[in-house]
Length: 71
Image (cartoon, rainbow, N blue to C red; front, side):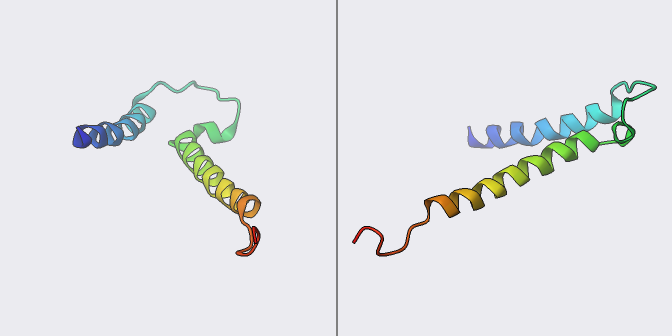
């Protein structure tokens, strides 16, 4: 079961990349960066990483207590 889960989780991004290249692109995009292949995939991935790392730093700062805080 675990192998199937990891296989499915690996196929989803692979399928997304294939669809990005084979999908239809409009002749005129609203923004110049929409014309860059894989832009939105990379933007979403890096944005997610930034949210995770930023959240860890902020929560560590909020939750952290000195060792003798409860004494």
